Length: 254
Image (cartoon, rainbow, N blue to C red; front, side, top):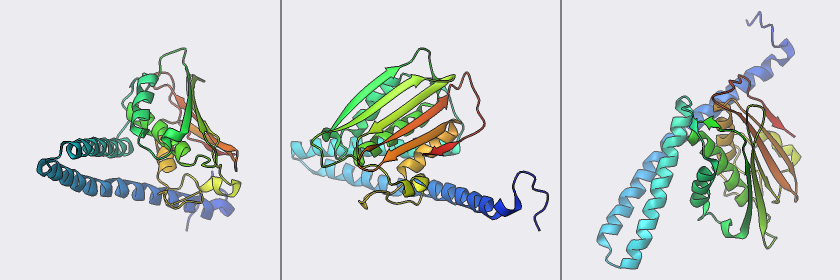
């Protein structure tokens, strides 16, 4: 029998327990998924290396070199994601322009990248300190999500990224004019097993789950606003590691 639970009404207890189970399940699924990704990546690296050594055509060799670079980046992201999940935060001063350049370079081969116009506004009055891999994960996944769910009926889609100081920290806002998200689905978009919030089935549903985990790691908050056929905005507020230590981790859905 469960007794003496002052902060949870008895009527709300099953819901609270269910939420804890869901969070634990998501954590286990995420951790296992990241580990499972390492094996096929290592196999792919071996195949690419073998092909590169045996093929004599110089143009083909150049393609395999490009493939190998992409695989190396993938392996690095898997490792940094696992470290983000398992370890604490090592703060450093962030050069957001440099970080953004690296993120955009990694996204340059994404389907739809060339059809997307990016508007970037970085206005910071003071230095920001935080864990670079976590910030990279947040920006990478939000921007990739905006590209993936662009409005394909338009000749050109626009993604706006704004980074500014706010309340002893920063605000990262990513806005697109894409297909939007139905209100009934907003509450599920951060679930690890929520495969596709849109009409396509190509999404594994991990991107926004990673964003949520990254925001939680930095004790920040995330807010999403969306309208079907109009677009979506993700607003992430993160504390400066040298200024603030916030204990609450709100995720706001509107």
